[in-house]
Length: 259
Image (cartoon, rainbow, N blue to C red; front, side, top):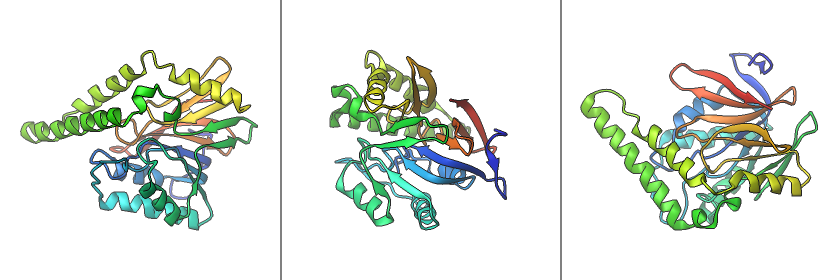
């Protein structure tokens, strides 16, 4: 953590910040935690790597004040000179989400190439484009959203009855995502796409599994999500890519991996 340059008020300066899967508009979104994290980081570029909004066809929006504050803060960062790039995912590839992004002045692109100070080129995209076809369907999107909603609802109900937090969703949902990855060859397809673009690595979201590792000559980075993992990727002012995790209870920001 020492190699990330601290700013006044314990804020951290990074050259680029990559976040995905905020799912603003969903009951399960942790917008409050993300806003606290964002207030600890100052970035020249902010990549919104898909599923920032929960705006797929048939989704029921549950908008909160915290989620609105996230958009205001991102808009304020852009107005202050930061570049904000919005890359849609399978939950927010509709016209409503695009209108939100356009209204706030975000650059809207299906994918982006990012080059670090160290000369590493990354293909940046949400990643659902390289998922198995059946998992990209609206039916599977509905199944996943309903499952998470039910589990979080059970956690709240049982937690009130037992008068202590219940974390069933934190145990079940990551296992569900791991099950969906079995035989999917998701990372392999993304790595090949990075090679095809002449890149050294790929940064994505989609499966809510934070990661930063190198395999077969390609660096694979997954931003994780802001429902369970509370993670983001960042290029520091030294050109090094890091996977960071936010702890909302302690307010600590830790580096989990680097590449």
